Amino acid sequence: MLHKRKDYRLKNYDYSSPNAYFITICMKDRNPILWSHISYDNVGAAIGRPVSYELSPYGKVVDSAINNISTFYPKINVDKYVIMPNHIHLILSIHEKNAPKISTVINQMKGHVSKQIGFSPWQKLYHDRIIRDEEEYLNKWQYIEDNPLKWNEDEDYVNLQYFESL
Image (cartoon, rainbow, N blue to C red; front, side, top):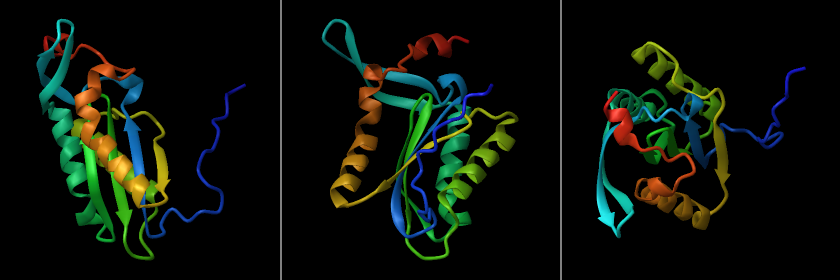
């Protein structure tokens, strides 16, 4: 018997209605394929925090796709995003009625990236959260801003220098 995933989306909520949404999309098997080079600032003896990183060729395709969301969906803005080694975070804002659903936008973006690179790098599902007020919006914005600096504290942290040598 297959395990049925819990549906965490709000029942009867219109995910095409004007609002801001915090989205997290992970790579299949948490593969850290989106960064190719990372520079660390050695803080203390054993702790290094990333100070700069370069997107891998796959990461550049994802970056281009994110930057083109508003071109293909003029009623939707990408307010803030970050591409991490094995996942991305976005704040998408729908600013007019009759916009496409968030699921349509995400699935189209994922499909475009998959077509461009020749395989699907994505985990099947994604996480979304309706941002309910300005305070939550600012918290999510700051989370995205700080995420690369905290990568080595992430539960999915992987020493990317290993992957650079592959």
